[in-house]
Length: 419
Ligand code: AMP
Ligand code: GLY
Image 1 (cartoon, rainbow, N blue to C red):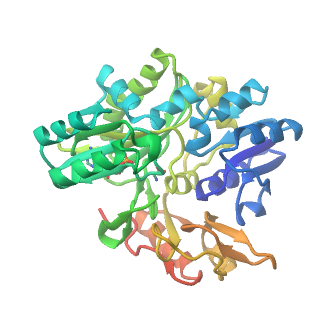
Image 2 (cartoon, protein in one colour):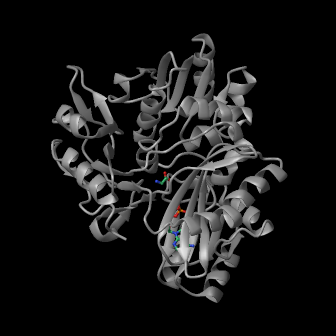
Image 3 (cartoon, protein in one colour):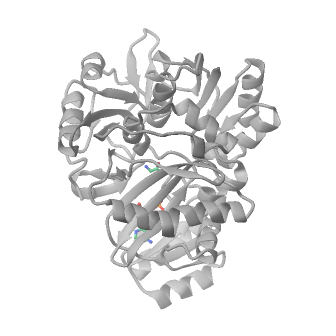
């Protein structure tokens, strides 16, 4: 099969890497891809959000299957458009991707189907939002309703901070249209765990649990980022908790989406908080998380292409999905200054040596005119290693990363140990 993967970050490199091992896949393409992906797939210079150009290219180049990995094209209906053009595609249609693209949709769904989550109310009126914040007190959480590049959540420690967040979101200043509706919710506490699950509309197959590290600096300090590292599986997420989540969260969510006429095909991301009152949903995403994907897929011992096809066809119950009995750690190497402004175009050295010690998934990399690999984004690389134990996986990822150098490289030294 000719297979196109849409996206160009570390998550997409991990997906391309896993698909490259499938006997079902003849030729791989990735749009737009990056310098690392270019070693496994032919990169196509089309923006991930350009639905029309993507569909036209897939059609004229005889793609047999397209994997849509990032949130924006999913919310824009890229899977709907591909399927309408007769091209089989992996990922939720727009009416299911809404579980991530609209927080008020997902909160209303959880309320209707009694899925445990933080208490909340949605607002479009500033006066009503301010009155609610005043009545509830702090700490309290203010969220933009729409997609806001992972930055639309303010965990406010004071009433004034929460009011300020509501003002800047509802005025459209902070996130444009994505913020003109806000969800204000109860502050929850406890460890955070991600569970990704393959879904075919009715059946779901959870992957090993994982844990992102969202803050920029050690000790979970500093600004929120796209994710500075991930481990899988998470030691505190016991079999018993997994069973409890299956009964109270995972299955009810997939059933609810089907019952509402929004059957979910693709990867459903459950962002969970293990609160003193039991596991609750912090957020849903309609895709693999990044960098959770890199850690989790490195543990997959089955054919990813076969799983993707089954998710689309509704035959997931017939696929045996196996996972390595190991742990994984993905360590993100970022550009100095990230998530704020950073320099691009810095040459990267040590990739070959690192690649002998670990899986080096590229995120923000590009090839310079003379063929050298240079930085081109905030998150640059995801050095990923396996081990018999979590400690061994962490040690192996750090050992791999030691070989890599670029100007102002930034990484956390406590991935897997900060909780
Ligand atoms: P989200 O973009 O919804 O994942 O939120 C980003 C981060 O904000 C989460 O990973 C949590 O750490 C935090 N957060 C979101 N909602 C809450 C909540 N209700 N209580 C406490 N922390 C939260
Ligand atoms: N790592 C969090 C996300 O992909 O949303």
